[in-house]
Length: 143
Image (cartoon, rainbow, N blue to C red; front, side, top):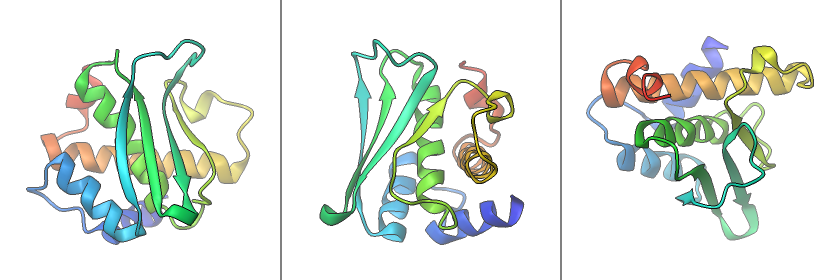
């Protein structure tokens, strides 16, 4: 998982001194799509879902949807997890990926490749949190 996470971060050139907008632009460039982060106000029926990614490969566009009701740092962390899915070239297929408040360790429905993809995306989100705030615990403290 560490090697995949490192490759994902290196793919976008995520480094210290970047802000979140810089990181989104770096991911856009790395995967050659335009991205937007959408803060959804109507999340009835989302359950534990905290974010999801849609990709329209034919238009080279994607969107990351997060709950507007979550604290700003948590929305950013959920979006960072979805950026991790985009950057993980080993298992990103352009299909729907979800960010849930349920740990992948507690989800028995995940296959091994899905579990690994979730872990890599989560590790990428932690790297992004360290770049932005010096530690991932800052983002987690807003949960």
